Length: 187
Image (cartoon, rainbow, N blue to C red; front, side):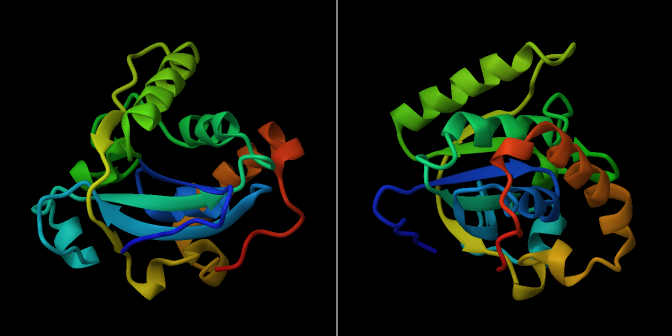
């Protein structure tokens, strides 16, 4: 899946555990213009939810985020990424366990790799344990199935949303209020 951002826009691919969480948060940020739940970072020629969850493809559940850096600085987006999950936990976020739930940043080029490396160093001061977020070259990106897109908005009745995502949304509202849009980006 190839993505050509609107002129002046940037696209990042980040993984922070289950893609439903990060997807639900970045949709609330001013300047975000497109969000897709994706699979990337694996060796298999294709990716599906079933295959990725088996842990045999090496893919991570990620989120492809297109944003306008004039409205949302990349540093703010990356800070939201680091504060929305535990980047010190290897291949696990809460009850979600396996390499598909790793904390990872997928870079397009050397400049983005350096930007991500700087963000890790900046975030490290907020954690007692070492950050284990991986920096991986961006390879093929596979869009997740339609039922995974904008999951939180479409399925607020699911227990995972109440227990895991609702507290993350509340924390985002408390910590990043100046960067929030009035209504989440629909998707």
